[in-house]
Length: 429
Ligand SMILES: NC(=O)c1ccc[n+]([C@@H]2O[C@H](COP(=O)([O-])OP(=O)(O)OC[C@H]3O[C@@H](n4cnc5c(N)ncnc54)[C@H](OP(=O)(O)O)[C@@H]3O)[C@@H](O)[C@H]2O)c1
Image 1 (cartoon, rainbow, N blue to C red):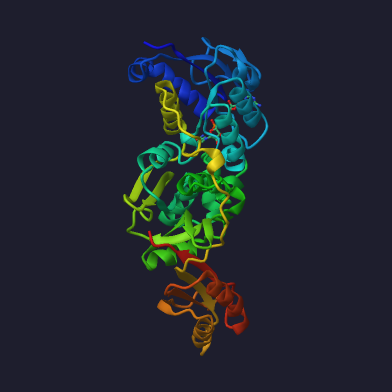
Image 2: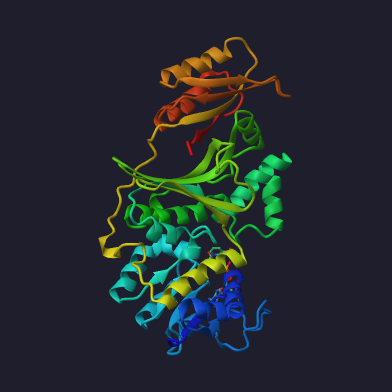
């Protein structure tokens, strides 16, 4: 058997403790599968006295992750502290410079500084692996960098934040407004310390930026992701969309167009009977489309101790086996900056309009849509609501975002709307 692979782990929270449990529970299995023992030498976290859900007494404690990153008796540095800067970044760089490979689950750091870290690692002949950074337990990084390496990727999309999917599906199943379910999610501990990372679409945007880079061979560019969270999704829209055969999902989509790379994270309607439409609760789904393979759908737990630690372990096992790949699937210096493009691909749109109950109101709406060049596929008028306004739903034929923007701006000027119009894109999935 080859020499052991000695891990140094910084961060003993949900993911770090999960990794330690797997290393302890499956020591024999891991040794058989890799041909070498996987051991833990040193660990670090903030509070040495904290009760941890695993026995860490056999490992050397370091107060400072830098000491783990640079220790002579550590071969592989596992960064599970988090944060897009500070100690996570500093310790990863220190580990690389000290000749160690790195495994991390840190999507924020990779989305913001992935290019710089990849160039540093590759210039030093080291690897950085990050399967757990996107969609938790779903092996999407490996699928895209290895299993689909013979494809030119045409589109990658998916539901990448389990908390948002939980909130949206719970609103629908319980008929509750956004604010009530947001509070429930907070009490269940599903939200990040800064909830805007979840419901504002930022966490999912980080993941989409990483997937885009791998899919299209471009430099990761989080700043170019158009991001909108789920805060404006109302229970009315969820119910009305359902009447029309759709569900609302926080959907990330990246596709290369002749104008450049479109990257968008936003609430969209998808057919209720599609795989994405059927995705309930905290589960994630990633859909990858390649020119030869067609469409691949990956589904599984996007977060949590077991699933995320499972993904971290797959990276550790690959390194133990001697599998060494460029960080983003091709050498970092060859990754091109992509021309960012705003979404322009035509799509159908859902519009919800609350109209005054007076003759000719609908005709005025139809006239504005006509002026915008938007043709109507389906329209449904509901009975009077309590304030005697009339809810009207419109599903358009395919049209451009510009035409929709024009209509949304012009509609209030008709004088027949009692509240701002709502529009949501309908994605073909
Ligand atoms: N949780 C998930 O489901 C999940 C899924 C995918 C990816 N990730 C990523 O995995 C990483 C870890 O997430 P987590 O959920 O395990 O976080 P967590 O539960 O908050 O744990 C963070 C750990 O880092 C330690 N830490 C924080 N600041 C430190 C410092 N300055 N020096 C030393 N240790 C420090 C904390 O120490 P104390 O315990 O002493 O406070 C804690 O053990 C993050 O990058 C996250 O985005 C998490």
